[in-house]
Length: 256
Length: 327
Image 1 (tube, rainbow over the protein chains, first blue to last red):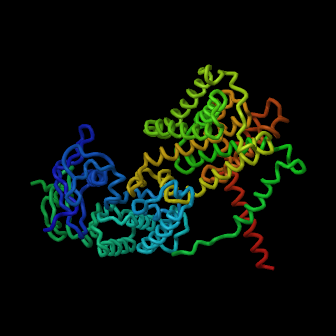
Image 2 (image 1 turned 135 degrees about the vertical axis):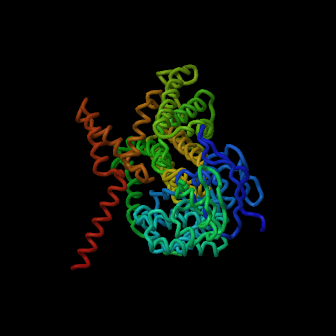
Image 3 (image 1 turned 30 degrees about the horizontal axis):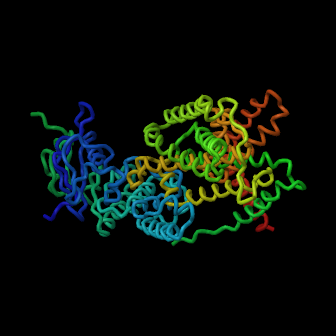
């Protein structure tokens, strides 16, 4: 196996006495779709928060393309190529659909207050490429027709797609999706699967947290199972469904 | 690339307004309101800063008068006591006030919401006390008089008529700069922070830094306004920069429309005209009428006068077009 795009070693996070994540070793292979599953409270979102720098790890190491990430502030990780979506979507309600995606171009553009205030040519040039690229990613998720609408006027399913477009606009190398399928109907889930495969084809590595098993099993090439903050198994989707530890984590042990 | 509809309506509205603005100070037109309009211009500059800070970025400040007063006093002290050229004094004041905002910005933005409001409130009160107590520099509660006018070469801005154009030049410059910022990458970052700080950070926005930058910009606006105020009045005293002054900035921003740059003019104008002209007929009851008007605006035009009127205007236009199509 080539060098993993993302690697964690002994990654732990404790909130006071509660150990949310306990010495987790991960290696996410580049170009693949990987999934993290596990019952509620298993530490899946905590793991995402550590990878994206929402809070610091208690101990252990995170490496992105071999470089340590622990001391990189959250906002710089987007520029490095690690971008996430949120369980609760968190669109910018004070903007249009297109502006939401345009804001995703932030780490891929440079001009600041001064160039903007004086309308210098640099601002104009960059702004043109920002809206051009934003439109490209909006079309990727199929929301081009809604560009000028307010972001929160979209139905939930499209809001989730918009959040993915916003994240994709940063041109991530590693895209973290936090429960992208929750609240979607079967049709929307199928569209979501297609979209995630298209994202993989662009060359983006995808890591998702998901509760919906059919979605995960149909999509993920590698599945990692967390339970009570510990990694209890990882394997291909087909193998993981037969894994006794996984079954008991979800369904409980049989009592003899 | 999507075609952004370039409407000609903004120009159709803006051009007559600009002509109107230029004609106001002439005696045969509305010359008696020149002084009032100068204050409206000065207040607009302070209000725009708060619109960017509160309306766009979502960070409250109840202490904008601190920056306004700092600008006014630095200009006054440098130009009067030390004989510095008023323009240079104004530039030094803006730089110093901006630096001051930068220094307090990082610690103050560790706070959010109500706590941020309290901290900025405290800032305003502390500066007010300093203006009063640093008597050997500021002249204490009586303030200082004899502040020189601004002048270019041999041309002194020594009449209200001349200062009207000076103040509105600065005011429109500040409005244009703000509008450009709002519609830029930085403007989107600010609105992203307002929308969700977690999401803004996830797409690479340095949240703390942008908050501080916009505070600095609003402080520089307020400082420039304060300097213009000092060189216009030729007299400053602490009472212009008390807690009520900060609250009035918030009122102007809210009435004009928090998330609209041009609304600041409407907010400053309506607030000032109400308190200086119309409400005087209510005598002691003016504050009650003032409060009632504020409530009515909040109930019926929650986005402020500017956006409210703009929407009304658009509705009328649509209705007019529809009638035209039917006929």
